[in-house]
Length: 61
Image (spheres, rainbow, N blue to C red):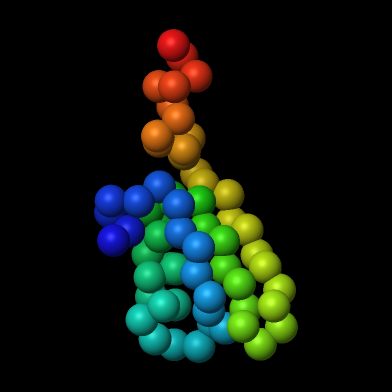
């Protein structure tokens, strides 16, 4: 899922498990990540380390 994506939105409270693993992997791969904590409803945005792929060529036209 992460390898075919350019952005991830996840609901995760940070406990060890599949969702946290996916969030960590997406950040490692440089995706734009938004994490919503279900306990506090706080939203964290971790910007991508690379341009948003689908629009990269769009703006150069």
